[in-house]
Amino acid sequence: MIKTILVVCVGNICRSPMAQYLIDREISGVTVLSAGLDAVAGSAPDPLAIRITAQSGLDITAHRAQQLNVSLVSGADLILAMEAAHKYEIMRRHPGASGKVFRLGEIGRFDVPDPYTKPIEHFYDAFELIRIGVDAWAPRIKAMA
Image (cartoon, rainbow, N blue to C red; front, top):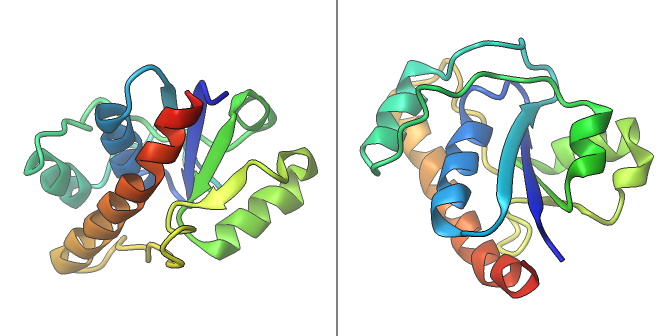
């Protein structure tokens, strides 16, 4: 049974909050959190991430970055990483998480590249990949929620 989903990227200011809020909107009855492998705790979302998500009706302005930690990992039933490298780093740091860590793009076999410090087109591309990943995961999560 999936009750809590944790979405992970590096800084927790672009990809993972965009995914967190999109999953939260698309799938009811689950708690969705996000964190970064190397987040600066308390950082606000990237302005371009705010802009892109707002165009899809999502307001991520209240989000604040948090560092991935044991409590978040142990409390999650499903952990979705943006890249294969993140998936393996999560499992390296938290061996007990093995079996519940997947890429957001696992089903479609893709990573979501980091748009941070890049032009806005990269944010659009990342958000579209996030949307594709969420669309692929949603029926599976709903079946297990």
